[in-house]
Image 1 (tube, rainbow, N blue to C red):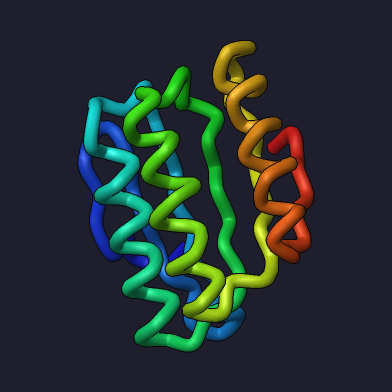
Image 2 (image 1 turned 180 degrees about the horizontal axis):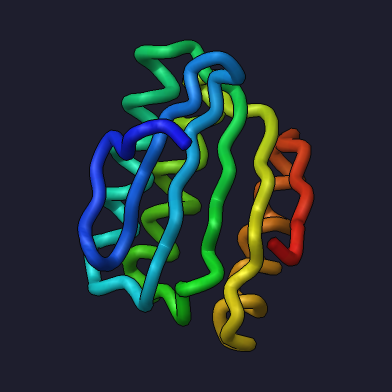
Length: 121
């Protein structure tokens, strides 16, 4: 696997150059603001590298704070779509609350034209 663009004990992000894929892994429940950091760095990678694909490995994630969730929908999604985001592959969170929240994100993002698929691993 490629070397992470950034990594800490909570999350990591890679850019897979040949396939132009932004890829993040959430290792454990996020702190407030972490989601904004991850998604902001990912949009920057998309813009710089003309990427259209995103792989979200959210197995370790739990519930996302409401303020971060709302920011993702209101700010991140429009920025990412404008940057060229078209395809989203998701490894679902293990926790039920995370899965439920992810379903809302999936449904909302499918409405803006993203092709979204979920995977168990």
